[in-house]
Amino acid sequence: MSSYSERARAILPGGVNSPVRAWNGVGGEPVPIAAARGARVVDAEGRELIDLVASWGPAILGHGHPEVIAAVQEAAARGLSFGATTEAEVELAELIRDRYAPAERVRLVSTGTEATMTAIRLARAATGREVIVKFAGCYHGHSDALLVAAGSGLATAGVPDSAGVTRGAAQDTLVLPYGDEAALTDAFAEHGSRIAAVITEAAPCNMGVVRPPVGFNRLIATLCRNEGAVMILDEVLTGFRAGPAGWWGVERAHDLEAGLDPWTPDLVTFGKVIGGGMPVAAIGGRRDLMEQLAPLGPVYQAGTLSGNPVAVAAGIATMGLLDQAAHERLAALADATVTGVSEALSRHGIVHAVGRAGTLFSIFLGLSEPPATFDEVSTQDTAQFARLFHALRDAGISLPPSAYEAWFLTAAHTAADVEAIVAAVDAWAATEAA
Ligand code: PMP
Image 1 (cartoon, protein in one colour):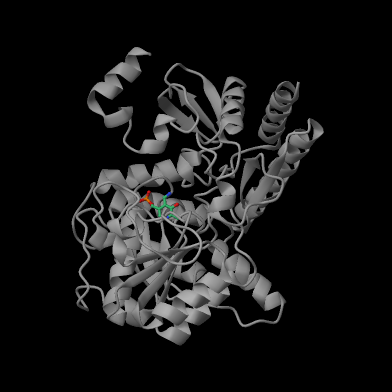
Image 2 (tube, rainbow, N blue to C red):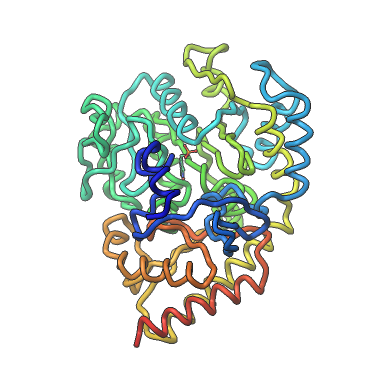
């Protein structure tokens, strides 16, 4: 164990401030990161690595984009936090609304967890109902009502997924298998008058990337509308990353092409990209729902650092630079990476499947078809993924340290980076197959 690890473990539980950073999914000792620029991170031992973590999504332009850093420095020079409204937070909210029409009103918070927690409170207040429907394998942050993923098959009454979550907090959460239209329809038939909200990841990316079956999000929207429940679309990870208007925008474009009326979520949660690497998240949605928030309405929500001026400056700069060209670049990089990695694995007979939603993707080792549910995801070969993770690390590439995460590209990755990733996967696959 390095002296760093000893020191970290002596003060931080598990040596980390967020569990996945401990590499429990892949084994080994994480080396702290000292700096990051563009598509590269530099660890504390001075090793430069091609980064496919991108801070778990926010670094969509690459790390430390000079214009984002300059915006943060300028904002910081004017003061770090005022606890009062600023023009900048209005501008960021407008940028979100202008790209994502269902966000008629926006409230800025600091983390995705706060955003989904508040969206649920709003839905319960607006409907006067208590039950929340969520899908197994979807992650919405760590508030009590959402730390429930137990049970597959038909609706199971929520059982806490974490110690410290009371039965009371979990029992009003119904967990359904992802993508299962019959289970969802049955849940509404049985509990419809008690369902306050259905929350879903716009496209699940926290069990690896699982593409929503065609029509599934639309069914949620329709059932919620017909039954008086609120559809909460969680775009914390996919928002402004899966496509220019998140995953909702991707489905909307398909619907318009197919001559269908696009569906619309009632509430949407954002995070990650809208803060460009600083703590910014948001709830957006229908005006009548959003105006139930204090001070206009009875639903309380607040934050000392909400809409923090330095954080918001990073978000505005990032959203400003994230133009059509950047999205096209991300899409081309995702295509090239997925194709190259998949071909390399196939060349050596490594069984795998690609999960893909817009520019987001992950590779499932040991599965021959893209999984559709968390149960199917759970049959992937995580031990083999751990070997891939360490081989890539040795080759100078930093994969997310878990088989249940997306591989994050940035607009700063280059064709040469993709070639290096593909070559490293090819070399590993050759050894693995031998
Ligand atoms: N929702 C989704 C879809 C997420 O991916 C995450 C974080 N990975 C969250 C909510 C929680 O966000 P945060 O970590 O900022 O609390």
